[in-house]
Length: 362
View 1 (cartoon, rainbow, N blue to C red):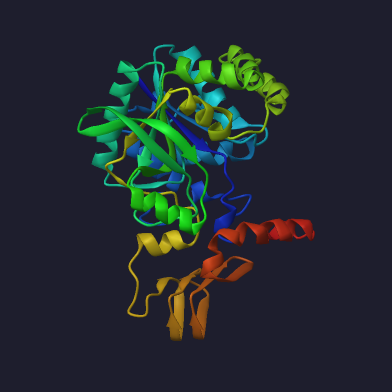
View 2: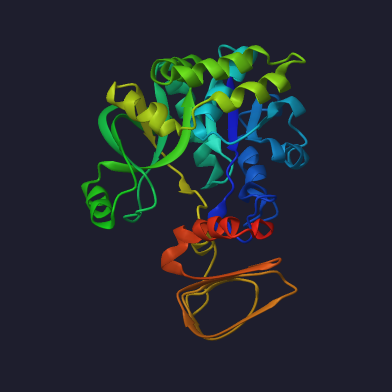
């Protein structure tokens, strides 16, 4: 049976100042009236009921996660005592789900993606579940056909064609490539052999846990010790005592890259549109622009303003004159003004504020 594991531990610092340490990105609304984490659960609800939906988040966010997702059993929201990147997170989820349902298939996804149309995502998820049944020792990931030569995404090079299910094709992953410089990204896109790495996975618990055991035995030991206490009064204390011992490592570096070299990873070409909502320019991709190419989510008065992304609270007016290609973001007690070409550097401001003793603004 299909289970969904949602990773919701990130801070979303590139969305500062709207995303803060006490209100990270997954709890924000960017379109409609549902937050990103609610939208993620909505997306899988037709195939995965609440009792088979799991969230791994930061311990500080457990209460808010349960409040936003009251349909989930409280025990299905697991709070990491500290962030250890995605390998321990994925391993913990797989080990706990394996104890609850050893024959499960797990769909792993971040809490902060925007995917449309939903029906196409569901078709792809159904296909991935079938591939996981037919190839139970394989790790399955979704690749996104690139629409431009992005330097902000990792890439997957597709190898030999494996087959199709539900009209969704699969290939062996030849290799994972890290975020490339612009000239290399252009070559990747022109070749037609590469997908963006979406960070969405489907696999059997045994498949990912076995690969973790081979490649990162220390992480495997930690998550298995924690999972052994699942469903007992000792679980919370075991989680607190053990989790910090896991190596801090991403799942790509810990498992996926080497597993691909061993022929253990399949990539399904996603039939849906995808955005990882990684920075403020996601507002531009997901919303209409005015005649001057501005994306406005604010009470704004602009003169000779072009190519800007402007967002703010309704009780504040943002006025601009003679500016172009800026991010102008107001939220609460903080204002961001940045050249849009540095959209991926906003997290450095958060780091600088912390280092200068002004963490109350982060």
